[in-house]
Amino acid sequence: MLVGLTLALGAPARAEPLKVVSDNPPVQPGYSRFVLHSDRIGRDFTVTVNTPGAIAFLPGQKLPAIYALDSGYGLAGPQGVVLSNTGAMEPAIIVSVGYLPGQALFRNTDLLHNKVTDHGATYGGGGAAFEAFLLEDLKPFIEAKFPADPARSVLFGHSFGGLFAANVFADKPDAFYGYIIGSASAWADPALIARVAAAAPKAHGQRVYLTVGEKEGAGKPGGGSTMTDGYNGLLKALKGQPGVILKAQIYKSETHLSYYPRLVTDGFPHVLPPGAPLGAYQARLPDATMAKYVGDYRLPDGRPFSITTDKEGGLYGHVAGFPPIGLLQNGPDRFFTPTVDANITFDATGATLAGVDGGTMRAEREKAKP
View 1 (cartoon, rainbow, N blue to C red):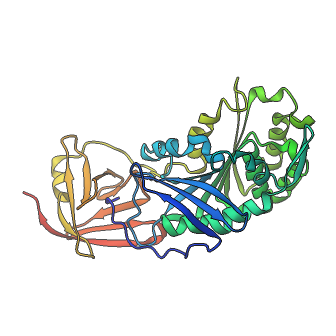
View 2: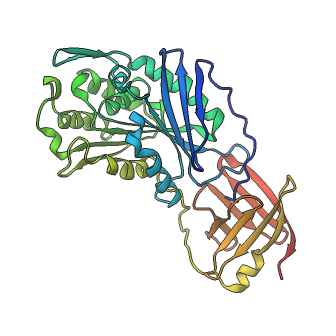
């Protein structure tokens, strides 16, 4: 909220095993693209970061981050920003992890923890190294460059990516706050479902979105069970576990890939539901009420901060150099921002801004607008 009081955050040092091969200038606001070399794996990766319009403004305030495998099929980042900016989900940073042109087949190594033989070809076995790359190298790198909350990260994978996400859950449920597991290729890892079942009781509130397309029951990839069989096995392993907040979905009349856009628009709000306070409402405020809040304030670092209104009776907070952000009422003198986890409470001499982790900031009132 209040528009961009972006404060210096005590970020961890960048992970040494990653080297920046290139850092392309952003072509638009909220978009960054890196080519990173992993010493651990011995290859380069493309990493695209889409950031929402929400701004972390209090000391220590950060945003969740969703790590989308397979570059999010080019959809996860843009769709996630739209969902974040429209209040359909909690605003989040979307980190899409992929490969350089001509290197996509490395996913068959990275996303499978165990080797598999499929139609005469043997591949896989790099999943443990790729898991370590995500958790020990890439996450610290992202958290050093962006206000990403280490405790509120989400892993998103489909197909082999869904298999990988399920394996990470089986290894360490608490590695991520949430998991989106779409059409997991459980046929490629016969031990997976039992491992997930053994790990599920160790979860501590992990939000899981588990899906498959209705038409994926036909055909047996690699000669093993169908995608629907894998979905049913994972559902049984996760359902009813007190530490797992599970939502399972079979997409009617959809195939393996056709429902992917809906996997984003449905899955992201489940793992990161919108955070509007209970009882919040949006309504035109009486002019007399508006007059109490409209005016000029001063932040602790000396920057001017103002509250203005529009013809529809909405309040807006402004900091010089940043766009305004609207405030919605959630009490007699209390407002919240729909784009970040933050609140503002007015009193006779100013306003108190409060957000995550109990951080607060005082804005003293300077003068009332005529």
